[in-house]
Length: 460
Image 1 (tube, rainbow, N blue to C red):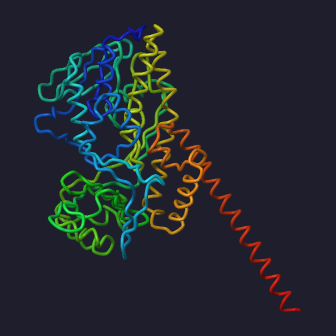
Image 2 (image 1 turned 180 degrees about the horizontal axis):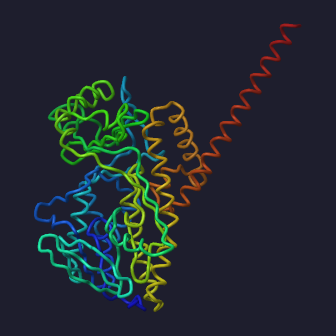
Image 3 (image 1 turned 180 degrees about the vertical axis):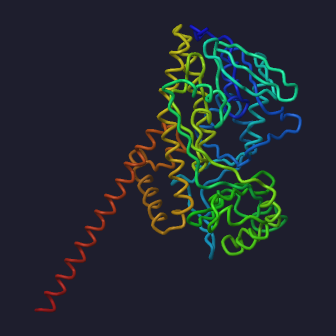
């Protein structure tokens, strides 16, 4: 059975993470009856969601989506604004690099768990939303527009039919896996050579930034070439640190450094200022698992009345801080496409096709930019040439605010589509190269004239 109308009916959302919960709010308010099904247990009693806990950097796109759901104030009240990067060299003082020429602009450090709980609470509060936990999606039947679920503890299996099914079940999506069984479904999964491990800097009782051990309004980076560590501030004064090392067994890698004692020895050489702030480094290093990072691209995102959002459609590495922001844009685009189709009494397949065409190029663009930003963060931020490039970008933006907008501003402080931002960023690079080349030619010409004049004077 294929649904023939986008008039609000019954929608099944697989996955109650960030995207699934926000989409449930949007669609419930648009008149849909929503069933939200999550494979994990209900986290609301313990007020903590298990799984990845790297802090999120919510910026303009995410804030816009939260505002639309009436959740901006609730979510942002505990956010910590980060106006730039604090770069920590092996030797010497840390240096600050603002994100924008506009000092009021900042990205926001937010707990992934707290954000997911806020979105889940909002979804569950909608009268037309039902939420079920501990049920894993095991298959999707595209002919009947239904999904089959298995209850983890009871072993009971049930089938849910809906007018619309949305796979919001993450990078290892069961809904997407069902789509992959069909011909002409393009799929690419590429793991990063690096993994990550979460570490911790606790709050302090004294010092310049107390209760924070370091400047709280910055994202801290320890760039070390092929590896790095970052730290994002939390309410209460602590920092969530994330160590990004290779998986192999050479150099700064999780394969070479395995024990807490070995990590402590390595930190004394590579991250000496951080080590002084990390009393539980050895224990954290041994206790916390090594995570993997994957980029997922696929097409098409929809089949019949089934579609994908968020990481299920386009998982990205976390180095531009745009994973959640991009997923929230998906939710807005899908809700808008469904509303537009309903207004025009168009079939649901038209809505899903319009949604996909609006998002797929942008998701590929942010995937590319996130991979590029990893190189920037770990390799370039400590280089003098990079600092000069940023100064040139900010100067041009101050004098030509409408003509020249740096890529970071386009991605983090605007809602310009990612694909357009990427293209404009490439044009910016060409402009700066031409400018530097022109300046070099002028300087070389002036030097040549001065040298020629000096020689003539000497000969005379």
